[in-house]
Image (cartoon, rainbow, N blue to C red):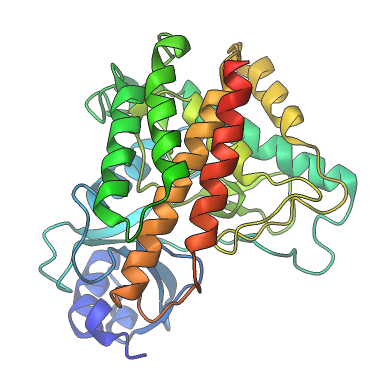
Length: 346
């Protein structure tokens, strides 16, 4: 597929050369990176090295989705904190350069782990437990950052966050669905009805899609996160939503795995979800009495995201990527979410 209309290297090159003060960036090549199922992610290479560009998919977009400004802003804000992020090098939020809003960040060395590990990497139970510890500890560090201290006091509205989130994802489902899925409608209604039982949650910066393959692991040490990526859904809100998502993605041995998010955690040597939840609670002092609600919400949110991906693929807005028929995945997530919500109620 011709990627030139999506990145406009002829316009990007002089802007990047000027921003980085290096004329070697005047001659560029672009490669679409696998794994970007929402915003499109490209590796931009030159004689000077490589950087990463993020931009929205082409075509019509759902309201408030694919906000490049939010991604760039939160990464800039977290640069000097304990949360590892890639430095932002260039941004054009007006979309004048390449025809869409985008930003360019440094390419951080590291491994993105999806369906398998590189040979000889994290092949012991100790390494795999260290990996789990590192993910939880980075999440703890993120939730400990004071938003006002890093210039993010206005990055979101923590009050009423959960209610708005449930309502928002119900709305996204209504806009993107192509058929009725009664279980997903029931899950959304059940979450809305259970909000009063959750009470008043904590508030912090939240990532919004925190999982293993949205982190870069250090090439030499699987117990160290080199950078947290994909900040598209970040905001101020209830940090337990991040934990619920991490646990949703952390599949255990014998469980089904989404075709969109292949994982290694079903293999031997990985601790289970309870271990991650207990480590988080011990580090933060948070009570996890309503954790099943948050896991159910993660299932609901992911099911809606899957439907949005299916709709964008059908519309040809995913740079030629195709993930097959995703109908069954939407139903599976909805049904598993209902089971989690039932655990909360009992």
